[in-house]
Length: 424
Ligand code: HEM
Image (cartoon, rainbow, N blue to C red):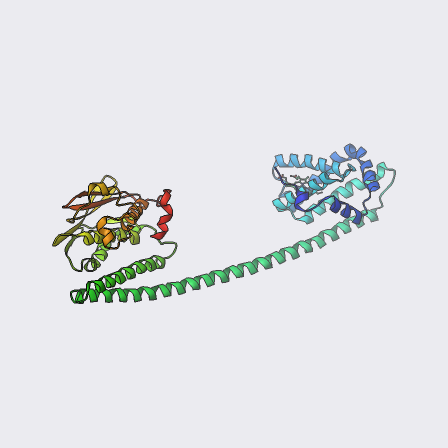
């Protein structure tokens, strides 16, 4: 339904009466104007024909009348409009339809000067015609004066519109300037944040390496508790560095997939191995072929880091062995991280990917039970699945699949625990 224009422009009965009063348009006037309706049928057809002939002979107005169907409809509309003009009824409906004409003209880009100029045709045609039927004659001086009056109105209105448009343009310019300043400030803030991020990252890097050096060089000389504290501090450094790195890699790109060399990610994970395996003898076997996949590098590195550090943490044999393998299965990459650790009892295997699940041995090591859960979430977000095969006493093999073809967008996770993704 079309919204009422009288409501839109706040033209209620009071406003209507005010306007009529200012024009001194009395009820008697309305009735008197309505007396002209009896000659409408005699005057209207010729007047409308002349009207459109005139509009078609002027390029400024002819450009709106190229469509023959529209032309016919407009003629009908004009007849109705003219009939209403001499109907003697100038209430709410009359106001509504006049406002609609104004909006329609504005929509098609017809300037008020052409509308007013065309109104002159009405006046010039129907005034003498009505006068003659009333037994009178309109002197040419008055007809000329009416033209001048319409010229005045159209010029003054033009200035009104131009001034309003200028004012709007001015406000628009100010708004644009304000927006520009906002974006400039925003950009500067981003640059500062980036600078601060780099500073934080390099400081954390230095601290993490200092911790690692102390652990490597003096690991056997410092008390176990101090060693644990150093390892915790190092872990924390790496965690914060990952967060900073994610922010630095452009907010709009954080978490986004790209082509990633899995070998490079594994090299980074391997670089951290001496930390996980400070008091253990561990052999880490990496991929022997180059593999590139479509993934979020930061998240995927965490998947490998989690699986490898888990395997190291739980190793119970003097010679630990952890291997990362890859194979294709149809349209999927399959990655496996296997170890010769204690294995996971069958009754726990279903639960280890749940949040806050802690195997009895992890509890002793102060784990939070979130590592494998994050692994599952990350892999699922990449369109893959994760699973485990394990033989108690012999070792475990964690596998996950990832699509070979790039996913256009990461699937939206609608599971109950979707909110937990923010804690990654
Ligand atoms: C006395 C002056 C004029 C009157 C009384 C008048 C009246 C009207 C009316 C009643 C409508 C229909 C509005 C609606 O859709 O509800 C209309 C629309 C229109 N008028 Fe005028 N008009 C006048 C001047 C002009 C002039 C000078 C032109 C220029 C050629 C023009 C071109 C149009 C066009 C193109 C439409 C839109 C038709 C559509 O697409 O629906 N009018 N006018």
